[in-house]
Image (cartoon, rainbow, N blue to C red; front, side, top):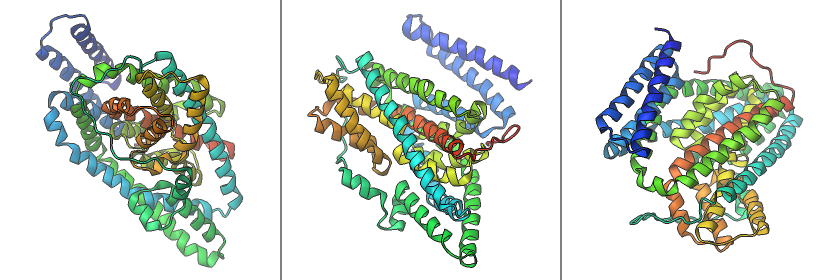
Length: 457
């Protein structure tokens, strides 16, 4: 049986299963739970057959997400026990980030000794990041004003969600966070931006040395980079288990009660992010002539991992590897991608604009256009250090609410579905940063599209 034939069967079964569930939940047709459960598992069984024939890691990750949803829905208590698998995967990924960033950046800078290019990549990256994230903020602002998702919001009876203790960073603290006081401390805490800055300065220093003194350290860093990419490939074999477990925990934890009252907000965010992808990122990709099909293949696995784990960091090593396979030079990938994790979080900045106005709407506070513009300007500044702070988007949202005298109780409602919202915004963060590497490479005239099919697994 060919893969195309299996896919057709799967699409037919998936469509039939979807119709059965819609008839049950929205049209009042009485169907037993056994019929609904059986239709789903028959559909997934065909997908298993496809995954076996396809022998693709990305396919197995998608399948694990499906199984995770089923486990979360049908066995919510058991699903919480799977959290250890997702934590193992995330911990393994975090061990890669610091050495792979250090090695690739040092090799990219010192190996070519083109220090002027480092400066060019820096200002080009920041300029691009600023333009794109500004569009994201504006789209989030327009979307929430159109849907008025916060108007009439009521917390479900008995709903209780404690806000974590968090303090927003001042602008001076945000700037200071960029500069490492201790490289080992930055590695321990997983602070990407200080690691990047240290690695850039180290690479520049190495480039200024005579060849006989530079070569041993350069050879070491080249060997370390290649080793860490192999390390990534080994860890990725555990990805289906970690990703499936993360989805199961999320679905089992949320349940369906809180969703019914906050679906409008959830749909507003997903719709705004989808519009941002189609209205901003796709035109950018077309303008700079990104090979769309190959780009989608390159980002499918990193985005799947980011979506399920709600962690941009978990997708970073695989995203770096795949962007290099796509034809972006390693020195550009190593500089732009991690820098974007602090300055180009498109999904997070769009979410912050949307969520801030949602809080005001829920509290029946009318904000003028000028006040909303001022809020967007504030978010434009405070969101730039977002990646270096634990629970960063929540901290910035709390700080913005306090600055504009908004109540905090609507944020408790947002926290009820924050995991589902985090999946979407994290995925867009990864897509935006992957695209940024290609844009900067094209801008530098160093992008070379690989010929033929590329194996991204």
